[in-house]
Image 1 (cartoon, rainbow, N blue to C red):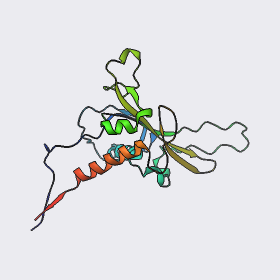
Image 2 (cartoon, rainbow, N blue to C red):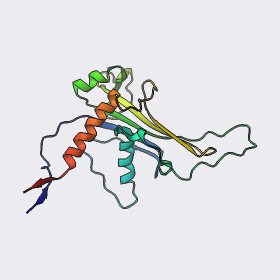
Image 3 (cartoon, rainbow, N blue to C red):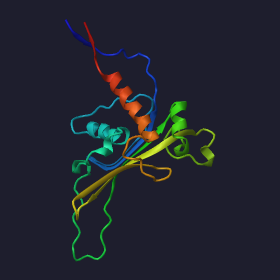
Image 4 (cartoon, rainbow, N blue to C red):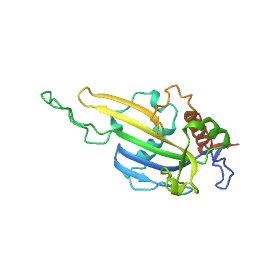
Length: 198
């Protein structure tokens, strides 16, 4: 007889990194949302409260293959921006969908890979530290997933960038951030998969 057995709650788990802050703008059901998690987080809520949208937002930034696929129009907050009037000479600014993550508590190996992209962040809020906070600040990284919808051409473009420099993470998925995030995704799936016991 087979039974599914989940890993015990007190099992030792390697901490790969910590999400210190997530800020979502115009993504799916979120017009504007900020979460500053403390330690472990359990996401609960009624149907259509945004649990799946929050997990999808994390995956857009942390899943290395997220930008290798065609972006989805369903990721853009509704209502969609209207196409501009062809007679208008000045095109309106189209608001962008974005997901900002602040990540802390990397291993020494990962910190070495991310060396020139690391910033001093406030450990309690995940925000960029100023001179007054330098003593308590920790090294971390800020990543942003961007999704731009062009209503005139009905075109979508998405990318991930380092907030420190504004440079885009390569689509190849071989960037230091992608390698760290792929370890997170692998460890997460390994922990959450049930084990089969004979």
